Each structure stands twice: as structure tokens, then as C-alpha cells.
Image (tube, rainbow over all chains, first blue to last red; front, top):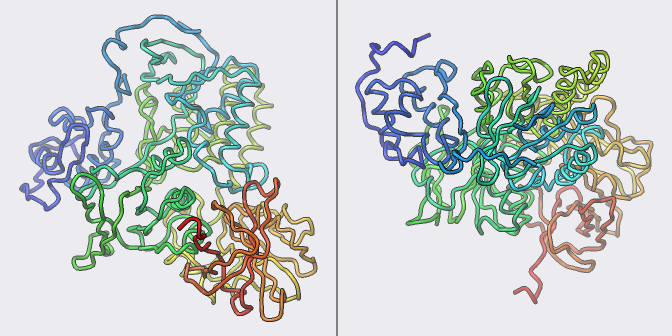
Length: 109
Length: 531
């Protein structure tokens, strides 16, 4: 089993694919090619790709693309999904406006 | 900060079931759900459920939802809607958005029943308006009475894809084709047959290669795939459609559990990131439970049982239920859950290709590839002694956990036995009265009443009909075969509706006797006024 933390491993050169232009993260408009390029730039985990490209950081919080991004990494690094750390889950899990997030009034009935 | 004995996140089938069981044991229970309406997916399920009586078989999903809500109300469960739980922290504290404020709540036990979200597959043009999830289509049709489109292509032949395709037709949409990259139909054969007999073609080993349209969907291109699911050049087919529906699986929405520090695993058989749970749904953190799709994708019937198990376990964890009482209740539920986990579509049988049924009969390959039984299959599965007069013909050929037909017949004509995945058998000694209870009770719409001696040269066929407008006695239309091919003129000789049929209309048509074992559906001709 390959270790996904070994950044010195050679994953070969970035070779463009015909579907590189397909959008993967709809909220932030990140394409498959950008994600593949990021992997070749050394981003081997979903968290790193998130920080590098903002994929999964938009309105739906990765609800749709999380799995798609993970599958691209799996293919590009030739590993199995269980070997990849999933993206960190953080509160707020759903988008919340700042004015609401800052409003902790106790209105419970 | 508001405190409860138990907080349940998610008011779907498992969450409500958990809350009800816990409240019955005396816990104060609050349920939070981000949606405006409770019930999760249940109120979108307008079809009759499978299973046996204890699993509420042959009851439509939305009815089960109504029952759960009134039970929850009766035992004092508080259900908060438009309440989005956006965080879960140490010591069982949650953060909820309600209106314009964030609230913190604490409980001594928490049950996470957040369900799942739909998967998507990508292709050229998949972000165009008109590409939607099958769940979205169901929400539009069944909650808001909106047609998602006029001409729809469905990607995915699992039960969700099959059930939603049928519902799209019920809503008046045209389903152009059902496409799946797999070489076999993934869902129940009976669901596939309902669609096939309306004339919808199945394209197995095919996938979408392009969604066409300038700014919304006007067409779709599909291509055949090879053994590695790679599209084969030169095999493209084009369809004019305005909607593409995707039913390509679900992913557990398990973020809250992960955030709280529960041990997680990536289990493809359970749909992705799921918590490690014991047999009662307790996670690695004592007092935090997971139930329903969030702990592994299944269907609503199992979700309700898992919910009840976690509710009872939470009650016992907090001392509201003795270990002895807990064990005896859980044992019963485990038996019920196990019976759903049997047969060809059991969680453990995923991806397995069965060649024979439990009874040793060769399975229908036509059903798996085209969605309907061929004539050789019919001969293999229906070996009744031909008697004169009306008799049931049961076209149920896969071992699935379902048995309402057995209880439906007042004459005990139909036998399944104790193993609910067994295929129904017709008892040769019993006499069918043609009451039609079996036809209406079959959730898979796979039972027909046939009378080869209706009139000299003509047979009558009674079939379940769930479309509007209903045919009228005396109407002339077209008899369709199992593959939806027109066979000739059929005359409607009887139309029966009854409360016991629960919105399934029993339509009896007269066809030439040669079509007695081939005609299985009726196509209304557009009436003059509708043209």
C-alpha cells in the first residue's frame, strides 16, 4: 500500500485529458484539470486541495463535489479511497450569514 | 442553554422512530430538522413499501410518515423544523440555527439521523440547468406538484432510479430512456417491469457522454461503455430531452459525527464515510448514536428499525430502560431487521450476480438486461395447473423481502411461508374468486388476474393501474406487452377502485385469448376532447 503522505513519490508528469475542462466544484467553479494540476503540484489530500483551490468551500460546502474530488485524487495517485483522509468537518456545517452566526440570542421555546 | 435527555438530529424515518421509542421510555426528546417539513424522504415516497406487516409493507411511504408524526406528537416529542444543526461538540452540545439566531443545546444522549445526500457523475454539460438529482425530481413532483420537465432521461437503474422514473410518468412526464453503466439493472425487477411495460427502453452498459444545449438541456448523448466503464467511440446515441435525472447513489451525511470526534471509516459498501457503530448504532463515543442512512445507505424500512433500536439503546444508556427490557425489545427488532437483510438485494449481496433463485429456478436474464420477463421466463416461474376461470398470475421472480400478497388473499391462494424472501406460490387447491386484493396489495405491481375463458376467443386481464385519468368501462385502447409493444385493441370491461386497494385502480381489459399471457398493460387512447 502506497503512503499518500510520501510527497517524494513520482506520480509522473501532468498530462492533459480531454475532460479537464469539466467543472467539478460548481460553487467555486473549479475544473477537473485544475484539481489534477494541484495534485501534481503536491497537494495529495482533499484538505490541501481545498486550501489551494477553494474546491468544496462554497455554498454547498462540498456536499456535491467532495466525493468527486476524492475520486480524482484516488485515480491520480492510484490509491484506494480508504487511504485518503477525508476533508475535515467543521462547524458551521451549512452556510450561515455572519450576522446570524454572531447572534447567539436565547430564543428557545 | 436548553437541555434535553435526548436530541435527535433529523426528522426522517429513522430520527422520528428513534424519538418515539425514547419518548415512550420517558425521555424528554427534541428533534431538529433543517427542512420546512418533517418526514425526510417519506413524504416523497408515494409508492407502496415492500416487506411484511411488521415493516408496514403495502403502505405508501407518505402514510407511514403521517403515522410517525402523529405518534411522535402523542408521546410528546418536540420537533423543531427549519432548525439546522450546524455543529456538534464535546459533551454532547450542538449548535442550531433557528431563524436569525444560533442556539446551543445540550443532551445526555444524541442520535444522529441526518440521512444522505445524492451523488453526481460528471460529463460535458452536467452543470447546465436541467440536470438534477432524482431526489430533487421527487421533491418537485411529490412535495410541490411541479413537473421537473417534459422529456426526461434517467441515469441509474437502482431502486431510486426505477421508482422515480415511474413517478415521473405518473406526474405526466415522458421518460425517454433509463441508462446505467452497469451491465445489469440494479434495482428490483418488478420496479423495472412497471416501467418497461410502459415502453421505456433500458440502455445497460451505457453512460451519458454529453449534455447538450446552449444554456439549458435540449438533448443528451449516451455511449456504450467497455468493461472498465470507458465510453466506446462510435457508439453514441442522441435523445431530445429537457431534463436529465441522476440516481447514481447516495453518500451518508456524517459530518456532525466526524466533527464530534466519532471514529469513522470509509466503507464503500455502506456508501462512503460512516461512523463505526455497534449493532445498536452506538458510535465510539458513549451516548452518541447513528441511525438510518448516515450509518450506511439502505432504505426507509431498515432506517425505521435502526432508529427504534438506537432510541431504545439511548433510553437504556440513560437508565430509563432496564438492560433486560432493552435486550428483549432489541432482539425482536433485530429479527425484523434481519428479515429485510435477506435475499438477492441484501446489503451483503451487493454486486453479486445470482444465476438461480433460492428455489433453484434460473433467474431471468431478460429482466436484468431489458427490464421485463420473456416468455420462457414466464413458463419457468408460473407452473400452475391450468384451471378454468379467473386465476392470479404472479410475475415476481426475484428473492426480495416482501409478502403482502400472502396475507391479501381471503382464499389463501398465495403462499410464501415464513421466509419472506421466498417466491410466492399459487396453491392449486384454492379457488380464486377474482377479488383482486392480491393485485392491489403487490407493491411491485407484479400480480395479474387472467381468465382465458372470459368469452369464446377472448381473455380478460386485470392489472394494477396507478395513472390518471383512469380508463372508463367501455373504453377502447391498446394492449401493451411486457416490453411496452402494442399488441392490438383492448376493451376495458371493468374498472374497480376501493379503499382497501389504496389508490391502486384495478383495470380489467378484454384481449384476444392468444394475448392472455403476453398483454400486461393498457394504453389509453387520447380521447377526442383531449386532442
